[in-house]
Length: 141
Image 1 (cartoon, rainbow, N blue to C red):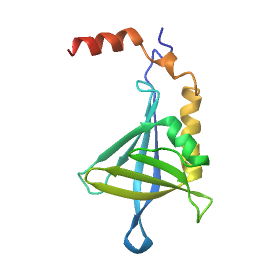
Image 2: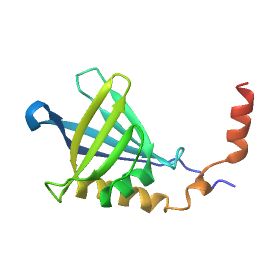
Image 3: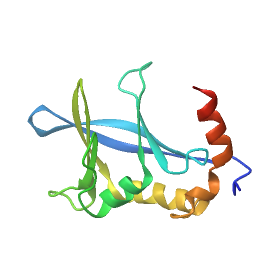
Image 4: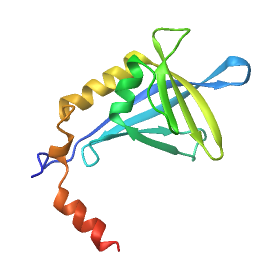
């Protein structure tokens, strides 16, 4: 059974600071999005250039956990800033390098609250049509 017959997308623009050399912060607007078709994930869309877009998808729980403590042990790590209690540090790693960002904890918490109004934590499974997903996966082989 799928609870959400109607797709819902939540977006928010959040001002991140890219931590460049010598602790210099470069402002970067990042679009955070949440889509009920993938209720476990959030996506951060970075636009470093006019036509460039880099998207990182990660668990909504990871973002929530990172607001209150160290979270993540893979390519994405999120934690409260040691130097500023109002900021969160987001570390992204890939084979081509790594990037460190700071973002306002309140803006991220507000975004999460909006997603929770649509899909409460723990109810994500009600938004997934397991039969349709299994059919899609088995048809790929």
